[in-house]
Length: 399
Ligand code: SF4
Image 1 (cartoon, rainbow, N blue to C red):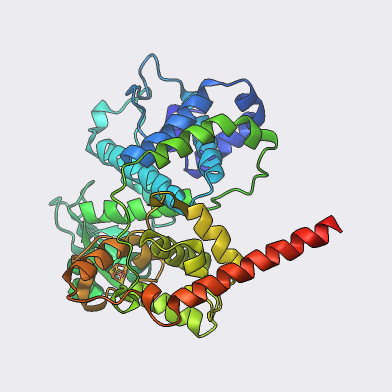
Image 2: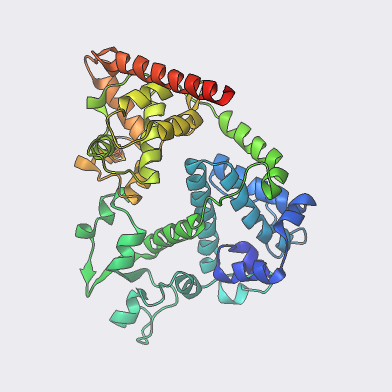
């Protein structure tokens, strides 16, 4: 277990170091070891500030830096974020781990060879590329052109690289801007030209993908490590719900929904199953615009979505101010293949809710679905049906 493992805890070597150390996480948690508090801080900082950097600022090589606590705080944070049981929290956590990691990589690459030391370990770009199986897919441009060093060999940190088109498409998104579209890129011999900063953006996506892998863990609530971490999880949930929230737009105008949501509703209408991210995005949007669980059930009555699943998901998403967790951003939806950025309207807003709010604000006249013939009635029927089902269940149980 060394400082580099603690600095990049998602690297394969760090995972091996944790396994080799044979540390029992339940025992660590039961003993309230420093890694537990640091794990909680890691998640809190990720959700609130978009970074997992410690507030104390302790860094590898400094006297108060606890390598073991720092490294083990990563698996603890993964458990905590799993227990939050929230897709946006996982998303935000993974993004924060990736953003912090890339800041560190950037600093490492800027560190001169002579200044590198064992106490402040650094990675080289080749190590990072190898970590993500990109060693053969990414080449410094000077290696091909023979320019940049004057000797025909590649410079250590050339300004541009070539990345094979497959990894380029996997790790980047047109939602990042026009310049990321393949048609706007120099493409030769199956490789795309990127600047060093752009390569770091792609690596950030690779880290995020790695961190997300396997999350959330399946943990039985109220048992074992989940029970021990209950207090920390409650604190984090409180923090999340204390976030300021402007309130929902509270008007249901399906014709003004953004294309991503219309497409998802269309897919469910055709009786096709929605993937978990698709269904989460749709539910978070419908709750986000102010619909109650009964209204969402009624709205989705003739689709492939099942009423019980909708109720479970929407009740969890909703608090008394509307939605507790906003729908994923356009960028995330693009990464999931849910957004196709029709007519480049991603320029208009950062997430589907914001886009819808703008369309509602710009509309002259709006007929709320809830006031339309059938809309409100369907809600009442659904609510009556749910009440009858629960009454029947209660009677059956009593008998
Ligand atoms: S840009 Fe945003 S709002 Fe528009 S379709 Fe994509 S995800 Fe939806």
